Image (tube, rainbow, N blue to C red):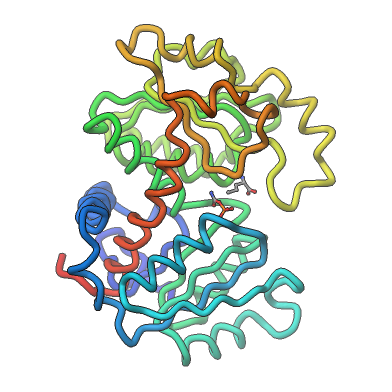
Length: 323
Ligand code: CP
Ligand code: NVA
């Protein structure tokens, strides 16, 4: 339901969540506060989505996103309907406009995982119900919400936190950059040449960082991870990129997160740096078993927190709780 009214960064009720760039830092903080409350005790919210139905459209595989949305909607009293869209892309059987015009008559919101971000924008444009991005080729906002929430939880606050992302400047990296720059978290992104984050996203994040007082360093030098509270990575070959696997493996070979990189990150921060990953991970490829299974790894906390931040997000978008 994209419109001028609904895309304002101060209005969440009835809005779409296609990218975190639409949220103000205060809105992000309010989602985190509600997520903490819902995580502590979901029972007061158990009827909040009563008589509300969500359609979950997935063009790609999923474990965490599918399960956390389904479990979350059930726990809030609503009904999720899963629509497996993996056999044909949105817009193939019928236009995305017609698809959205049908769905809006049966549900109160849509959660969609798509190949092309443009499909999400088109769906949001035509469906008069909120659309939540469950991952596109450009962004993964629900993941980044859980990631920054996890960092806040683990480190007590985001004040003075330094975050390093090592790997592909893709969807997960883009949303992480949005969340971090909005929330004032100093961020270093380290990618192989040719795999840096998109220029428009980088420009947008530099603007957010200027307002929040954060720094944003984009480099190809892995030595830049020194002195960071967390090191984050993602797969080198994302869903839909199988045809580029060999080329990507060669390009990313020196960007594996291993124990030596984690020691470098931990230098000067007075604690062990945390390891983060959105999952699924290719163990031994972008991260060693030693790192992902270490006590500093928070990957399962990130996965657990997907549930709580998404619950908070749904409650806010549907106006099911007071501000
Ligand atoms: N992190 C994440 O989105 O996982 P799934 O692809 O399993 O949903
Ligand atoms: N970058 C990965 C993230 C999966 C959660 C992908 O798009 O496949």
